[in-house]
Length: 132
View 1 (cartoon, rainbow, N blue to C red):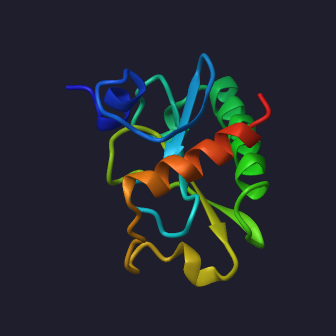
View 2: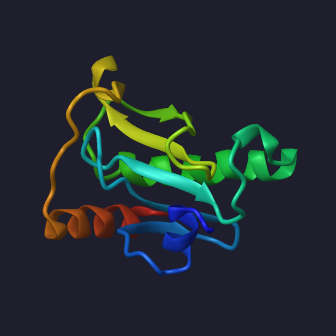
């Protein structure tokens, strides 16, 4: 069965898309730690990040960098934290988390709650700022 991320990429499950190219897809995390928390996933469904070939891994990082620059242009933060945990969904994904303090990256803290309009507005602003 396809992962939830593959279903999102295929449009079977809705998301708040930030950016996409032929190999990667970025969208807002529905349980964000901070405003603008984004997930970047390769379109090829491979569970563990280090099982990707070197070319894909390098391109994933470069795509994530472009997404992080788009986030920084919209969300006030000190920097974008990068986290790869990979246990919750068996599909490689990078968390890009706008942060102003280290506790912003604590996954055990309560998640932010946004209504659909807030998600759509944030995603639209970041997407407009994305430079492909």
